[in-house]
Length: 167
Image 1 (cartoon, rainbow, N blue to C red):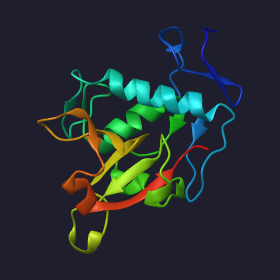
Image 2 (tube, one colour):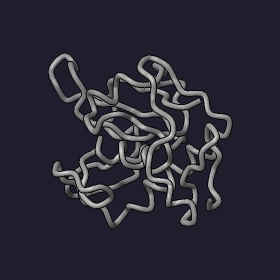
Image 3 (cartoon, rainbow, N blue to C red):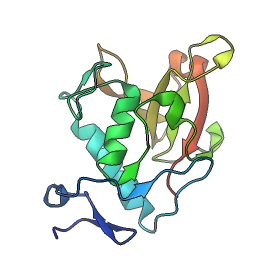
């Protein structure tokens, strides 16, 4: 098998040569994080996969893997490409997985959720925390895949919660 990251005994795409692994090898858990020995390498590869879509993938609610995605389709895709199954392409569903993380303790690779609904019921947006107050997300149809600042007024106003999928 081609070189890649060893995750639970299975190769996970971490380089072009490991891209032949197609199925997710670890499933996200509701209410808790998944323990992975090489956590930082997997998280770096998730982020690398997401950044590789900048200028290529377009914001669209009609999902075509790697080409047309909304925010939660984007997070689903980049995690799946790196061996983590988020179970759903819907942001409300993704918010059920992983362990809660206070905003002050965000760590690279955490999923960050937002809600523009009254009383912040439900989730309307999701992105991946990069560290340093930055977020990688499929922002909207004008920006597509973007690196955003969590201190930007929109993100501050609509911030809802964050979840740590892998640890």
